[in-house]
Image (cartoon, rainbow, N blue to C red; front, top):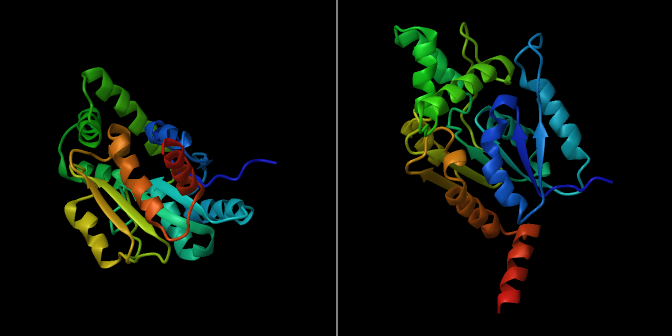
Length: 251
């Protein structure tokens, strides 16, 4: 029988999965973490309905509530699920998700198309630099290919002709919000707008130098913040137990 994880990383963007690996590996050394993935073909509509139903089918089979983590559109899926089925969610961690949760890097891309008068290759190169701490031309071009693939394969609400908005509201489950301080997609207004929806015990953290994929560039800083958030929750997790056991051995 497969092991039920304590933490589930959501991913609806196959091309962007690589940016989750550094943080996921660090957590896998301390707690049981699983990855839930959804991918669609080019012939399928951009709808979260099927993804939500499949995620619910999986979480209903688990024998305990689970911590959900998601970045961008994957975080939006977690947010929508937590609003519908809070009983299955121990906590929700949203990375690069603003108070208007439908806004993702693709929204930023379509806005730049309207405002910048340049060819697509130049536009994608600039966006790649804006979203990640790229250190070389080769790195930027590799990022461009990843973003191009994401436009084709990810579950996103947006197209060139239409961008969709989701109501601004919170969730009843414990909530952690993390964003990059230099993220052009999630503006300060979108980040600080969460303050109107935070409950007692929720966390709101800005990574000072981070861009849109700050969890890839600064996994250790983010891990410390999420660890502390989980430990602070009133109901102990397996991760808390592992931490306490580790401290006992050191004593």
